Image (cartoon, rainbow, N blue to C red; front, side, top):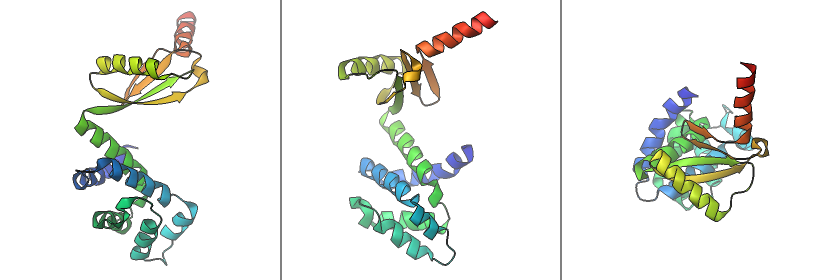
Length: 178
């Protein structure tokens, strides 16, 4: 995992420099490229030694729907990935691009796992409280996990704040066994 991050980060940084004005579109492009590159048909073409680099570049770009697909920077980026055999890094490049972009904007993604759906007002209140706790602006991603029973589990970067009933029951079980 750390190897992929180490290899993908320079590509993400370079792409962030190119995407200085339209980062949202570039992030969407990288995510779309990642999906296209992992289609079974595309994977078989990419792994074939009979197919040239330019053919692979043309194939990847032709499958895109992004308005940036005609940009010379897009073609150069895809060509560089194909020539260096780094197409499989696209998901991690997209992740690193998002992390670097968020860092420049003073944002962080927060994953909020809840046993039940969280409505707009409750979500807003929770995000405001979490922003105070983590001292940065947060972009929430809400996931429903009935296994939590109740409460929430919050993940910001490598920090986890688990106030779920399941976590509390696990703590009680550990205390009773000890």
